[in-house]
Amino acid sequence: GGWTMKAKIDGKDWVANSIIPPDLAGRISGDNGGESIGLPYDRRGMVVGEKTKFSHDNAVDLMLPDDEGGILGGYAGEMEITKVDENWAEGKFFFTGSSSRSDKKVEVTDGFFRISLAKK
Image (cartoon, rainbow, N blue to C red):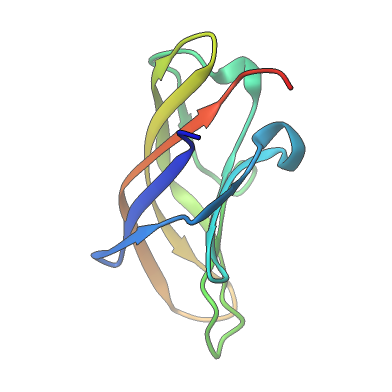
């Protein structure tokens, strides 16, 4: 239906095969086999040029199933809204995922999403 989310996770192509509607999830959330990216979402912020800086108070959720629990927070990075019309919003993002439980860092680059803004 036009919904999409993709990125490079540590240089490897990643594409969501399912996306939860942001108005239900409260996040822009894409999943592929248990690997997921959840971006902060506020419908009022869906304005072209709007930039959201990620921080401890406004973090990305990154789930990567592994031996360490696989939940990382994206506390450094940014999301920018690049296109909006009455039905769709698009944006790009990048961030570094990390955890207080380990020294592991994961770079997420070249992120892109397209979500529906149409009311159901």
